[in-house]
Image (cartoon, rainbow over all chains, first blue to last red; front, side, top):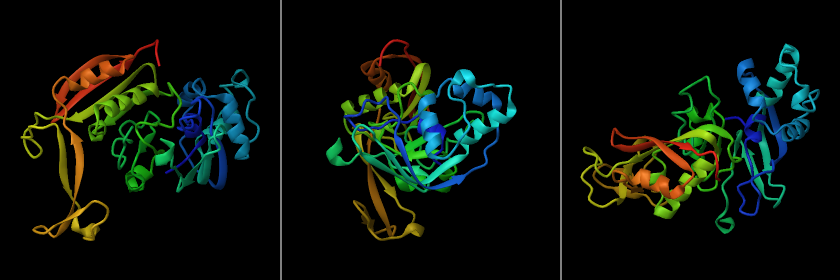
Amino acid sequence: ANMILLTHNMMVSPMKEASKTLPLKIEAEEVQELEKEFNLVFLVKIIDRLDWAGFLEASAILNQQGLPSSTEEIDKTNEESMRKLHHALMEVDVVTGALVCTETGRRFPIAGGIPNMLLNQDEL
Amino acid sequence: DIGCGNGKYLSTNPKVWMHGCDRSPNLLQHCTANKHDVLVADALELPYKSSAFDAAISIAVIHHLSTEERRVAALKEALRVVRPGGVLLVYNWALEQEGRFGGFKEQDQLIPWHLNKKFGTDVVGHGEKAEEKHCVVYKRFYHLFKEGETERLFEAAGGNTVRQSYYDHANWCAIVEKQALSM
């Protein structure tokens, strides 16, 4: 299984005290690169659903450079830049590490590309 | 896919990006689930932002929750992560079914599940030895749904409109649309 930046962008902390609006902070230990089929139609549609600032911050942590600083700057006709976006969003996989709730500090571990987001009994 | 288990529905439509979650880390490590984007989570505390998805499914999941309060809470969480105008599909085992799991009068049941001997015969957790079959048996909680109950729970959850409800292979099913204003 994989933990890609598209997944990260759809996630929030499940902690009771958290606002359910902020992105989790990525701690990456082992990262691998995947190969996913480039789908421009999908990419154009998904751009509208992304928290772009959260995506840029997470991309920087995973050393993905040269991404547009806002969605207005995206040139959908420029294949090279769209492929770069595809790569950052779909092909960078956090195998081991953690997702950290920035509001509570709680760390949710990622192992084998699978984040474990279960709360402990005393957190319910 | 809320409660995606071994991931069997995650390849249904390759044209959409699908995410799966389940409470069992071991099920997610099954080869099918492991090919997809999945995470470990509880249906009552989904780690997804509100309105993230165009659609969600929860197949044979909510019937494992032991109180009506928790079953309604699970529907509310599922609706929360779907965008306004998006759809949610839910399947729950039916009380009225015939055949292998039929004939129950009471809705709350512990239904035995026999672990295939090839996975071992040591008793783990709440399992018990089934002497005749020389294997381990686990009892799983099910709240079997009555006709109309799924719709009633969706009404209690609020913020949705039932688009279709039907009976399918021993399940009471519903497709609902998340309403635009609420949640």
